[in-house]
Image (tube, rainbow, N blue to C red; front, side, top):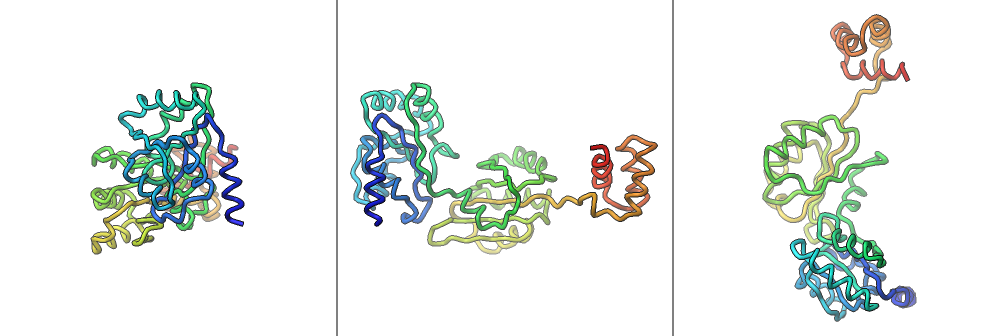
Length: 290
């Protein structure tokens, strides 16, 4: 049965097409039959690091012409790829792990090929982002993917501050040598926000840490092994007090004040009188105006 599907995938590979192929992010068994079919049929495989890709191909007994396409030469190599496609050849694009063009080279090449009127087809597969989200317990229907956080402390702190009241989960990548500083910066802004640190997904030392930002920070500080490998951070949304959760007497005070005062001023005064959250009172008043 497996051979049947593999052969069907091989037969579906088209000429004059650039296939953007997702490769395993760790466990080699995570590659798809379709990815293997495309890689085995491709005339040229564009790789971020040909040495890394050669190991993957060797593991599956695939021989192919490898072309190094990195961030610094992507525009230049696009001309060679377009020429090969124009000759009717099949080209596959891979990164060292995961999907090209997602925090890896590939976007410029795909754009150039499409602009030339040639076909670009995705071959989906392993994803660190989706893998981490699937086990993080995120229930929101949407999320924000940031990619790698800024390397400079000031820029990182400024960015984190903008997420202080984010109502959606945020997915980001971080490097081992910056994870301690990043967690410290997070703890300074939202120490009690739930956080998941997914490390070395699908690899031998795969680890998932969850808790508040402060709790995860403590675990990482106490165990140097938790500062190694590829990392995905998932910051859960800020806990927002809903208007319906406000006591009836607080809602009544806000109703009276908002009828006589501007909404912002009414919320400030109502918060002083009732001791309730000013933003929740403000949002309540806004909901009455909808």
